[in-house]
Length: 253
Ligand SMILES: [Zn+2]
Image 1 (cartoon, protein in one colour):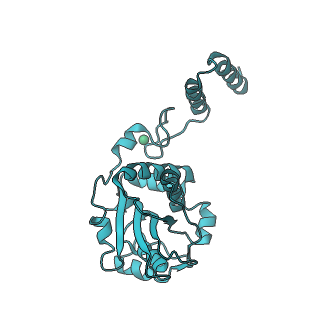
Image 2 (cartoon, helix red, strand yellow):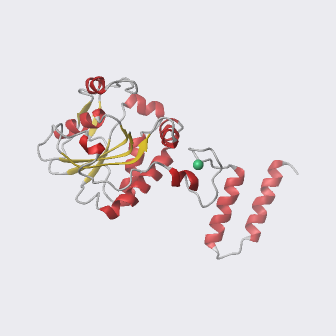
Image 3 (cartoon, protein in one colour):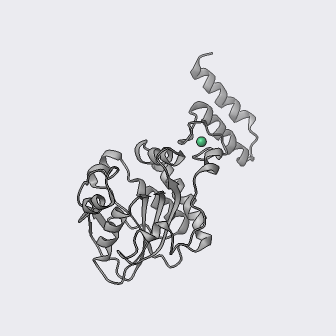
């Protein structure tokens, strides 16, 4: 039996065997069938996902280096901004290490065209932080923008996708085009803290003011804080009564 006929037969069996009215079962069957035709792969370990696993396999989801419960006002992420800008709450969800699962996750999110992974991770982070009142009195979400050329090349901005998932779960509006990245700055991977600070000077320009609002800035990775700092400063330059909180998927540690 040819592959096409075999698949058609599989679909036929699926339709006649699944009892009507049992929608949960039907959904599972459809997921199983989809996974046979086009297996979904865990972006961290590369193993096939089963129908109950959404974006990561259960094992990798369990083993991610979570930051866990930290004081939102005093932690290694928030301390990067002390004395530079008055931040409210700061939190990073996982620890980033170059030779670990978090590296594979970030690589997939940024370079393997997985905007869906960003939305899912955003939802996951928001579900974790909602009961801990992280989003209390936050008025709006702003994602750190990419330069338009990089955005066009990649097809999406991973930070916007994370922010989209956070917005979907919390109901807090995600604002686009509030701030623009006006320079396509060099990669900062091998730069020192001082070089990063210089590389991010005048990197962003606010297009509208968020006067009186508590803004949640969202980015994928927090390293020295130079990029987030420059973005926050551009937003805060438009008004003195803007409050900033920061949330990232990962922090280098
Ligand atoms: Zn895995």
